Length: 299
Length: 319
Image 1 (cartoon, chains in turn brown, purple):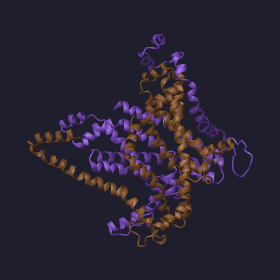
Image 2: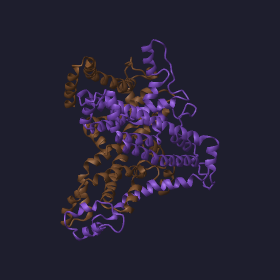
Image 3: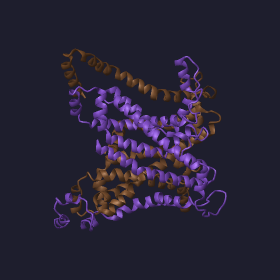
């Protein structure tokens, strides 16, 4: 960016000789000075206002919170509100439930997906091209949410964590296959040859050589899939609703029970509690998360 | 295929793998593949896909033609009764229309917001970098939580109207989520707000790939910043636009959370997307109806996916 600004200067100074061009140069300079102010204003208005309302409302007593606004609480009862939702919303159980669903989902979807992607990337042929197309079709096609419940019941795993994990793995395998196959194609097969000459079996080659090389693309897939699974309420409602606690399901429950009573202070206390773990992770790893998401998307 | 035989003969030499990359339409692959890249490694992934993804989809095509419900134990085939009922009472076409309109609006707003933010925050200054981090927060948040936040903001006596009242001096009490015509637009704006950070990042990455010399050249031609954006930079963003529009459009056909949390499908079912209809009828025990709508959603996305991706791809080539 530095080069472009210097050239702009050079270009406009040559132009400054022809008098009428002058104002534009000032306008460009002026924008450079105004831009940071505009950026801050945009962030404050778009993000600061809604989040501020959430935090202050979560500290208010019910009567004050009925019409959420931006004013500070006249009477603070932050701790009390958070303690109430912690118990009524079973936040701890929900956190554990969400984690018990997320961890195996990510582990299975990444291993199984990468293994298949490796083969799909290295072998050619018409049949494999069709298999690949089928493998990635789930990126756009919506899962059959009603009949999957029936299927899980027939398998005897409806309303259980393994059932939920199976559904999520089925939903996000396509994403993994799409990202990882593209990535493996950029890894030179020569890297595998050495191990193979030493007599390593395919599975060893995969786990020792390929999987470690996939780290960047697996990081991207992990971030995206974690976001979807951690925040999902729709599929969770059908598959484990009322049987397993997850953070979004319990928020749904707190809010559905409270909407009649306009319990905004409790809803927002819950929103703060459920968002905190993600925000902490983001604060620690924001650079890697942001670069991971963009590198995965732009291919 | 002469190349193929050559590869086979010199299979141990390091030059062989590069020849393997080309398309091989006929005959068996390089025989080494059979042992080095066993097809059986595809099995775990495709078994899971088959059981948890494709089998339920096949069920969709079966149970949409039955009277499956929570009211009786046995399930009978009823032909196209479910479709006929949903067509004759207008539910199917209405939910379908609302879903498609919503998806188009979301794709529009999400990309508009994302592009504006990317252009605003393009330079790598400290303020801009920090702003981008903050604007990514909604992407991380639960969509359900986002929906509740905006429901509170947009209530007739909510925070937005309070601010507008103070700014304008007049009492503002617009029911932002109470119009049977405009609420769907408002909810699509909220959806756009939630995902604008992701679009912004992808547009930023796209802007970064543009060759600075092109911009310099057009500056020498005496173009204005606006002309440069419309004629040089925006066309070069085509791949990012393709990705963003396609994912936003096809992804939001499958939305639920934000609409459920803001309006629940109301007012007067004017924002009842297919997924909200499915959720509601499933809750009433009308499983066959829910399945029928689930099939409608599947077919809609499948039918839209090809033209949408194809159209955007073609545009990309032309530019």
